[in-house]
Image (cartoon, rainbow, N blue to C red):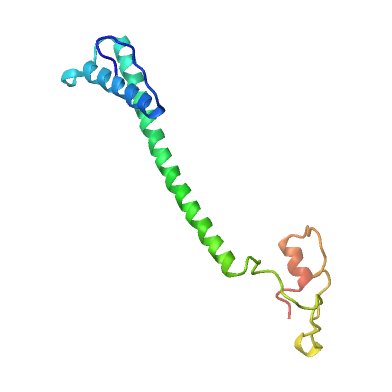
Length: 142
């Protein structure tokens, strides 16, 4: 810090932030001494800019702490996945092992043959309205 007007030498980012925040706090404290806002519009502007900078710095610090927490959580998750992978022998647990590469034939007795109505298996747009659909499907007719 300065002493009687001597030059201020700040060696790290943290020291710079502490120094500038200290100056802002001192400025704000002096400007609102006694709990009263300054009357001069220029002093009010200076005060509000100092307070805005202090708020911005506080929000940035909160964001950094939050991101550090997320980073720690991501690191923990990555370590857990690594342990799981090692337990599985570094292989994909969802990959097929062995097998013939062909689909198993199913006896026809397992699959019921279904009758489809005309147009049921058609692909595309159907521009019929509800009444035309009912008529085509014979809904409500016995």
